[in-house]
Length: 124
Image 1: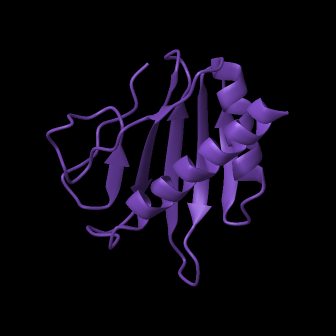
Image 2: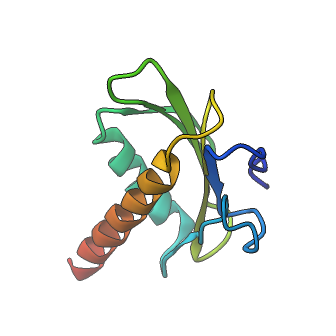
């Protein structure tokens, strides 16, 4: 499975594009466990975020919608758990051309939360 490519606009980031595309590309989330473990952690993080709502979930895929604070906009965030050792993602605004870096900042923060929770669970 491949997540959809980012459009030319500056309101999307993805781990499945070309690393040469500095505007859109981000590294996937790396981990040492099983894909279901990663999916469980991500599900928990999303459920604990009041701005996120899980909209769809399959064996190796999850889609959430983020509400933008104070504005009537929504962003779509998709995750792919089918590659051992990596969580791939795509985060994109539904409207507009630029998001002022919001999708990139969100995914950096989510990656850090994932790493912290993964370490915490591994330590127990």
